[in-house]
Image (cartoon, rainbow, N blue to C red; front, top):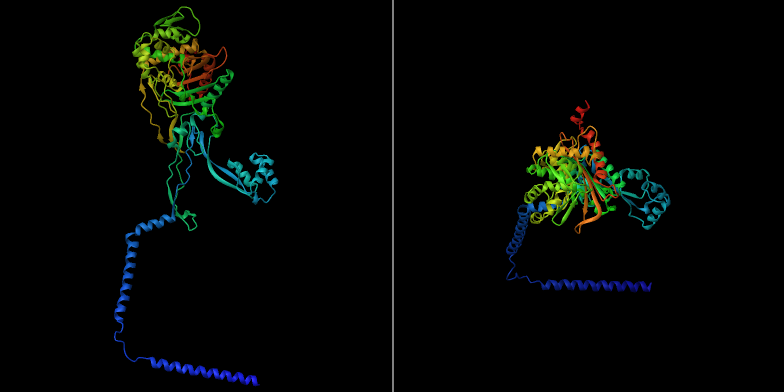
Length: 610
């Protein structure tokens, strides 16, 4: 009770003191108030005016900025915003297909897949997975298990897998596999036309054949498309122009006939195997316009697996290598002499078996005694001496000018790449030396490509015109309509039709009774010429024991159109000559060409049968 009373008294005392202090404070404040007005009161209007001015300046600044953004820089900023929201996309455009003259596909783009495995997502054991996919992709179970154990994810299991195999893998319904589509160039004929078509590298750029020389025709020019981009960066196809993924159906058509090509390859390989030859080539040309129906070179490569091949095989021998043509050039020399009036068709020439030209002795391939030969007999027996006698009737300067006119020492214009320039002595060297015109008369001392020799014999077949050998016909669509044709140089007249017909008829005797009898086909008139030449050494002179055998044919004689040529490098054996090695190849090719081109039997033969 006492304690409670004391607390109450103390509380009242404190409250009393607080009221006193508060009263005193109010009195003090009242006493400090000065009832007088200040001498200089603030100018409220001036302050308001200042505030108003600041606001106006701010509004003018804002208006100016809006004017700059909306009017002055409006278009620029709008375009910048659009650029941030849009992306330029150039969709993948497949390379145009390549087809032969019968529309058989020689090269085409096809979808393939890279197969990735992610072992951490497997719902079966690695052994079970390996057992299921091993037979499909051609891999051993143990190898696959080892691969799966190497990483938990992102393993490239196989690249370039075909659609068929990919479909089989997908049908297994296994988790943990990813299939990324890409496109690959595919050559359905494998190595059949590799030397003509060529191949593309990993960057899809042509490296050989028409894949290289016709790059611009094979590439489709797809337009760049602007597409809208969403906030997370993904493309919005709704804004793409209609049909932007469509492309033309054009394809590059060649003059090659796969049927003739296949027969030529088989015949060439057979003879090369028989005579253990180093290499060989076959060319079939339509002499009317220079269209090449077949061009085969052996050995060759598979463009689907070009990385596994020797790089030297990428060179097409028929256009990229030189050789001395030997006796197959003799008909061309006869045409030169006839055209110049240096000889007449019924002239005869002495052939003693050997002659001396300066310090050099020239002999025939076979030992012969003295004889007198007609021009057809010179070709039939392939007499070197007879050819020297013919060319000796021409002035060396005139003869040299004719060789230049024929294009010797120059490149042949063609749509095949990597054509090399032939070799011919300078005019000064040629004219000042008596041996040069003599050796040139039987096809030695200069070099050319096999394709150039075919071109020259084409001039004999078509009435004297030098045409351009080519393999490209043009761009056609799926309906067969031509949209682009190759522009070729105008054929150049070098011989008269009278001269060439006489030479072709002389060549016919070579097949009928001369060294070219192995190319004879019953019912057809065929002109031809064999060639067995020494092989020139890169270091000068000739390689001992090495020879190049060849045979060229023109058919039909009564209406010449086709040139068929075969050449085989370094055949082995005592009986390795143009007549035994190359002529049978040409005969086999002609036997396939006759029904394909529907060449009728020669009228002269048919009348004789009646």
